[in-house]
Image (tube, rainbow over all chains, first blue to last red; front, side):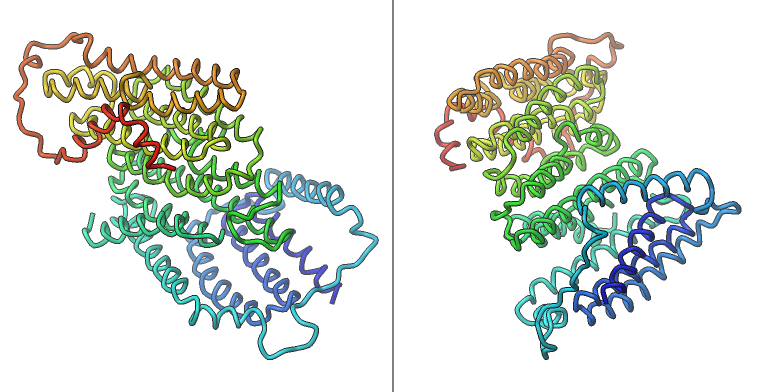
Length: 173
Length: 348
């Protein structure tokens, strides 16, 4: 279990480095997919299995897919991959930065092992993640309304910003 | 803009700030800040020309960065201390990070660079909302964490903001950039007294909002956005020109106008706290700001710029804009000094 968490965390760092090193959006979206997928793995490692599956379904399978299609609209004939020098430079710098800071902050990463922490000692009926969802619909009703309103607001904001095709605010669309 | 969309955006702008005011949990405060950022974005880009879109993009990027930093700091605090309550934040790293995040949100030096450029790309009404309403929510958060903030950082932010706000505004001829640097300087005054008397900071914020609203609305009424077009106001509305001159001097902090009140009280508080050097530097930096306010007054009232004869006798038609807010805020900006104790009691 420790090894699984270890692999997943390395995958997270590599995915994030792959996005931050500024390749073409084509490949940055791929980095985001990888980072989100292993993020779900981290959630599983901390006992949030329901949340992890919901994240996979809605975030990865819904929103990131839409984002990847939008990024594919920005396809270029010669995209900058992670092998091109300008991007590779940033990849190397970021990985070196992670190693340096990791060595400074968590100096004994090589000599001890993590214990994966879960919420309760035994497998219980109520777990943190889906109890939280249940709370959203009962005690946290106001939060649900605010979250729903915020999603609706985002829709209107995006529609207003992209209104007008080439005469609008985002002329390339 | 479609009136339904405008209603949704303006109401969400209000909801966002109200949510941050009402929250004691960092996540809810963050949500309120994000709602108000999202809601103002289409308002900023509503004229769809490239300069407005550029200002919108810059605003979104800086505010999103600041919101991410707020999230990062609050989760760090929750991770190390288990506390999500705003007023119980105790992790020093998280406190420094959140102070810098809130400084980025409102445009304090040294993270002020976005404010002049963003304000310049907006029309005067949206710029007014940006300068006044959007400062309220982060300020509420700063007020709540003020006892725990790192004192050196707060004084550095305050001093740097006042000095840079004064010096940066000296070379500007565009009114919106001048008002941006004025905002930076006033926020510096608010930060410097935040740890000693947060109520004085609130007082300063309220009075600054009144004075800035009066200024923005005056410029909107005579539709001037440059120093050169300010010189034309005397023939359009002599009364408003006089009042605008007084409002600008009030922004500069001259007695017997309202703007003197916060500066006076803040200098008194700093002296009581045994910080005479800080108080002196603040007073001297305020002189820098005073210079560009005086330059605007000079252009408006003390000199008649070279112009054609036709301009000296323009038709003085009734303005189609409602001037109620302008008259109320101008009155507030000019006449509140004699009732200082009452105003202080408002913010205790």
